[in-house]
Length: 432
Image 1: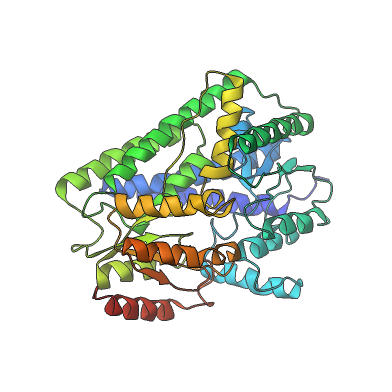
Image 2: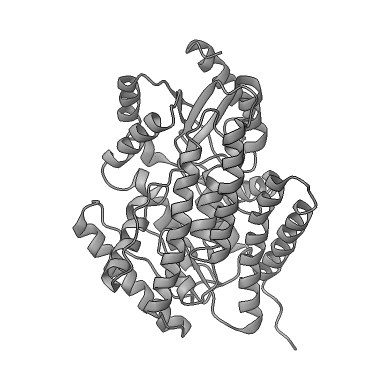
């Protein structure tokens, strides 16, 4: 009698099919921007399909993270998914809220970030497949190591081998060298537990294809400096981040997506087209963007106030080129990117200077009128530096809007409450 299919694979099949339907529907549009937006659904469907194929063929697949050199997994031909993707992908507000509510019965504190709670819930309830091996994450926040400890004690995951690269605190050359060695250990761990080999020529090819994507991302961000900004929240950094670091890491399909994005955006800039007919307030959203409830709220900002998110934490593409001329250069480049250049890592790891430098650069380059500090309830490490950020904004003459919210669950601070906060803030600053 055949063994029952793991419920996580059943869920991945459903998501594979749902995203494929969304892609097919988008391709019926005559609008090239709608068709291009549909690509992301196709890429997501293909990522899910890769996990399903590996499972059904009895081949290895892993759980890992965007900041632990996913280029290695791609070079080893290992399909992968993120352990903590539950609040970001495939969730509508109701199921996510239900899972968050259910974590209280599991004994999880409700002031823990929704990323950690929902990911623990997904593992405990079989909503993600059990991988061949897993790469843990020990940074940037204290909740992530605790999440891995819970997962390691799960009945279904306790035999899954897990390796967690150890992140140093400082962002100097010594730290990069140390983390590069950790990534080498990670690759050896994956070879040992999956039977796949890491060929350096293949890793070089993946990194170099990825470099094309990062260069195109830089060009796209240059176009976002235009007034009016060609795009708002709906085509922001979340999509660019997803393609480069999650869905098509170092793969030609991702490069093709960026090329078309650049072509469409150049057309909008040439025609002076923005997300709202009258752009009046340029916002820097200095944290994660809201997830499933973003469209209603962000559309209100654009339509009611002419306020456009021209840059956000995930959209800022300050990535250093990786030297592929030597093995050492590749490992050092991957280590630097994972430790200090990927979103959240560059804002929450190590001294506050990197966060301050980013803030100054974005404010000046993008003509920012208001810095939005979501003050996400799960990002407790950011609250320690808020006073420094506030004083810097005062020195630069740019007001900062402190919300206090949960970017995943709009019951913490409702959309209406946040709208009231923005209304009062804009009026007080003379922006209305």
